[in-house]
Image (cartoon, rainbow, N blue to C red; front, side):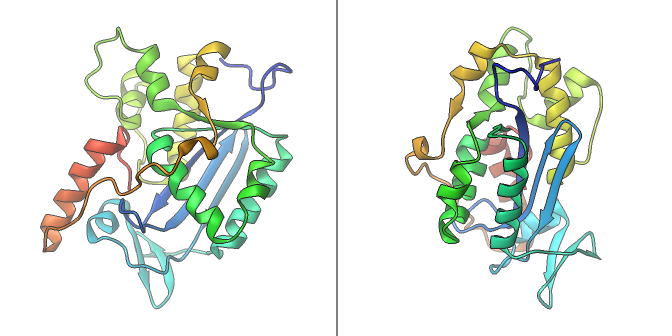
Length: 235
C-alpha cells in the first residue's frame, strides 16, 4: 500500500466529476473525493439540460429545478458553494495531490472552467500540489499484463476482482483509491504523471460531437464517446 502519510510526499485525494454530458459546455452535477477515510460528496443543479444519453446512463435528471438520481431527490449546493466546500476539504489535508482516471483530458478542463466561472481558480491552486492522471499511470504500470481495457471499471474488476456502481462519482473515487493502493506506484512514477491546471494549455473538452437525432442515437453516441475518451465509463 502507498503510504499517503509520508513526510516526503503530499497526501493523496482521489476525485471525480459527474456531468451533464461530454461536450464543451457540460456542467458538473456531482463532485466527490476521498482521502483515506475522509470523504467529500456534493451535488449541483445544472443550468443546461442533460444529454439524454448521459441522463439514461448516469441516472441523473432535473425536474422543476430539482436534481434527482434514479428518481430520488437530492440535496444540492450552488456551484460556488460546492467549490468553496471542496477547497476547504483540500485545505484540511495540507496541499494534497489530486488523482483521478482520465482527468487530464476531461475532469480537469471541466473543473478549471468551473473554477474560472466563479473566480476561485487561484484559491483552489493554493490548496493543491498538483494532479496525477491514473489512466496513463496504469498503462505504464500494467503494460505487460495483456489487458484489453484500461477503463477504471475494467481495471478494478481485473485487479481487485470486484464490481462497483460506476457513474456515481463517490463510488468511482472509493474504487480508484483501492485500485491505486493495489498498483503501488513509486514516487518517481507518480512524478512522471504529475501536472497542474495551468499546464493543460486549454486542451479540448469537446470529446465527441453529438449530432445524431433521437434518444436511441444519442445514447449510442454517448456510449461510443465513453469508449473513445473515458478509459473509464464517464457519464
